[in-house]
Structure formats: structure tokens, C-alpha cells
Image 1 (cartoon, rainbow, N blue to C red):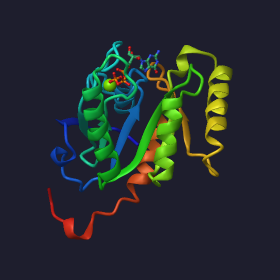
Image 2 (cartoon, rainbow, N blue to C red):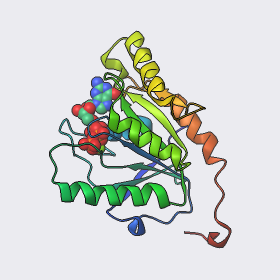
Image 3 (cartoon, protein in one colour):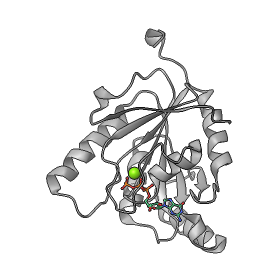
Image 4 (cartoon, protein in one colour):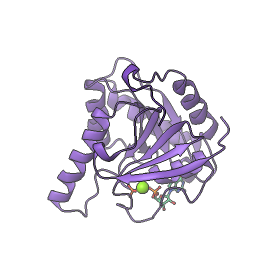
Length: 208
Ligand code: GTP
Ligand code: MG
């Protein structure tokens, strides 16, 4: 897929504030600092679209980006960030869960996993929860440029192993680097295919 346009639409703190749901949508979720915002920028070829930071907790809202006037990429806050108050953590969880489980046009959730570390409980639990609720998702192993391919493949195998108790069929997997564009074509082709499956809800067939 060729990216012709990228437009920041809005930041929302509630599902009901999100843009209309007449276009297919893909959301990036994962632990803080895993590289969600960087992946938005890498895929779109627009290094300034989403805000990136070396400090965890940079993204704090639901951010909608419209791509090619045709589909949305959504950058979410990270989970598992230690330096945050309990009440703030709860608030974010409610916001994110409500979005993830109720957003009507959300086609697939991209769960980002740091390829350099062993399977983390918080990631495995999150993925299991999506599986239990029948929410479509894929796994993205990030920061592959930071180590050899052998190590990344091992990390993928370890994560699959951690999932095998709960999943009969493994989700689709992508390996990426926002530094080298690894995985870019694969993910964009995947999104292009899934875009074709989007059906506008019959009672919502109006022009935005
Ligand atoms: P929060 O918004 O805090 O949840 O983080 P995030 O998941 O959006 O991470 P972000 O994209 O802001 O990246 C965090 C840090 O990791 C930044 O310093 C990025 O430059 C770095 N980073 C992200 N992706 C990659 C990658 O593929 N390779 C390398 N080498 N660094 C990366
Ligand atoms: Mg971010």
C-alpha cells in the first residue's frame, strides 16, 4: 500500500469522543516504551505524526490518525508503567478497555511486544484476555534492529510457547524495526487486505 496522506484527527479520553466509525481502524497497544508511536511513524513514513519519547508514559490519550482518507491508525497509551498513581492507572485501564472492547470499526488490535525480553506476565495476560473475548489481534515484535535475527526468532518462539496453553491457533506475527523499516510492507499489505473486509454498518451509510 502506498501512503498518500496522513492526518492527525484528534486525541480522545473517552470512546464517545472518538471520530465517527465509518472507516476501518487499527490500534496499537502494548507496554509503555515498546514502540507504539514509533511504529505509527514508521508505517506512515511520517516521523512527526505520533509523539515519541525515550521516557515511558509519553502517549496518554487515544490518538486517531487518518491514513489515505480511508482508514484510521490509533496510537494508545502503554500499560504496565510503574511511575503512575493507582487512580490514574485505573482511569487509563477503563478508557483503554472501553475503547478496545466497544469500538465498532476496530478491525484488528496490534499488540506490540519488545523482542529483546522474555515473555512478560502482563503481555501474556493481556493477550489471553483478548483471546478469551474473541477480539481479533496480531502480535508485533518490536526493536528487532537492536539484536540478531536469531535472538528475535528465539523471543518469538518463547512468546508462542507462553501462549500455547491458551491458544490452539497462533495469532499472526510481525517482526519490526522502526529504525530500519523492517516489517513495514508486511503490515501495510495486511491492513490493505483487512480494509477490504470492512462493511459500513447499514444504518450508518451516510457521508461523513
Ligand atoms: P508510550 O507512549 O510511553 O507508551 O511509549 P511507546 O510505546 O509509544 O514508545 P515510543 O514509540 O515512544 O518509543 C519509545 C522509545 O523506543 C523511543 O526512544 C524510541 O526511539 C525507541 N524505539 C521505538 N521503536 C524502536 C525500534 O524499532 N528500534 C529502536 N532501536 N528503537 C526504537
Ligand atoms: Mg507512545
